[in-house]
Image (tube, rainbow over all chains, first blue to last red; front, top):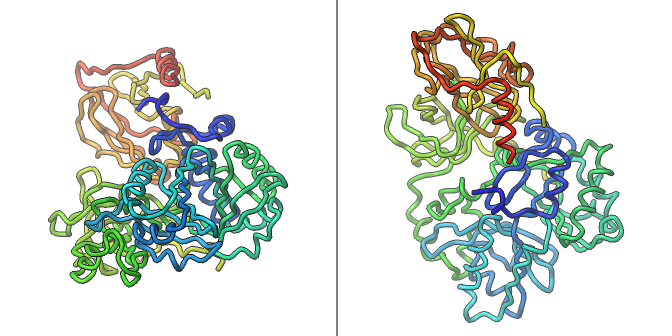
Length: 370
Length: 130
C-alpha cells in the first residue's frame, strides 16, 4: 500500500516534527518509534509515555435500547458496566469466532464503544447489521475524535497538573468528562494497554495538537516521552494483553484465547452464545500459552510450533524479546496437551527447531491502581 | 536524516556493505540499515565454511520488533564470523562499519554481485525517501 493511500491522525505533523519513524499500520500511517522501542518501553514502566492512538475507532451507541442492543452483540454483561465505568468485551460471530475486541464506556446517557483501527468499517457494519429490532443510534465518531494514551506510574501526577477533575480519585476502569489545560473538553478514562496505571483521553480532532504539546511540556520533568506503536506492542505483550490479528481473530474462539472471562453465558442470549456454550462444554483442543525460549532464538508471530518429536503443533501469535524481563518470550496457540506450565515444544526459527518452555502468564504483572 | 556512507566501501540494495581486499572481504550492514532496524538484540550468522552465492542469506539480524535476513553481496565462502557482535549485538548500532562487521568471506573465483559505490548508494537512499 502506498503512503498516499494511508490515513493520518491529527498528530501526524507532530510525529514527523519529533523525528518519529512512520510505518503503515491497519490502514494508517503511524509512528512506530521516536527515541527507540526499548527506551520508550522503559519510560512507560518507570515514568510515563504518551501515545497517539487516534487511529482507534470510536462509536457512540445511544437510544432507548442501547443497553439491550449492546447485550445482544457483546459477550460481556454490559449491564454490569455502571454509569461512569468502562470494561473490556468481545464481539463474536454466531460461530463463536471473534469479530473484534472492544472497550465499552458507559457515559450515562449513551455508550462509547472503542474498536480497533483496522476494524472500524467492519465493526460499524456488524453493529448496523445486528441492530434490527432495536431502537438505537449508531454514530461512528472515529473520523472526528482523537485519542491519546498517557501511561506509566507517573501518568497520574502529570494528569493531575492538566485536569480540572480529581484524577487521583478516578478508579481503575472509570471514565469522567472534564477539561484539560482549562479549555480542552475531554473524556478522561483510567484505562490503557500497557500493564501500567494510566489514562486514555478522548478529544475532538481540533484539540489534539494542543493537548499533545502541553502534556509533553508539563510531563518532561516527570520523564514523559512520546511513544510509538513498537513500545505499545512490547508493553502489551509483556502484560499478555491480546492484540487483534494475533491472539484474536475470527478463527480463534474466546476460550482458546484465554478470554473466557469476558464471555458471560449466564447473562442470557447474545450473538455467538449458543456456539460458545457448546465450545465451553466440550472444552478446547488448543490453548493460548506463554512460553520462554530455552534455545538461542527469538520467536515471532506466525512462526510454526512443533512438538519435540517434530510433529506440527501450532503457531506463535506474538513473540519478541521482552525489554523489562530480559528474556525472549512468546505467546502461541498449542494443543491442550502441550499447554501445562513446564511443557516443552520447538519454535521453528528460520527452518531450525529451537526449544521453548511454557511459563506462567502474564509475563509482567500489571501495575494497575485499583 | 543523513547516514554515514564511507567512500571506500561498496553497497547493496538490501543495505549490506562490503570491503573487498584481494580475494577476501568483510561484510556488514549500513548505518541506514541499523538505524531502520532500531535496537539490535540478536544476530544469527551461518557457520564458517558455508559457501554461498551472491544474494543468498548468510544469517539474520533481529531488533525488538522484527527479524531481517542478511544477504551476501557477492559469491563466497564464510571464513570468519564476528563473535563479538554475536555476544554484543548492540555493536551493530554503535559501530556498523568497524566493530560491527558480521562475516569475513573468501570470494569465489569469478565472484559476482550487484554492488554500488558510496555515491550510488546515497542516491539510492534518497530515492527511498520518495
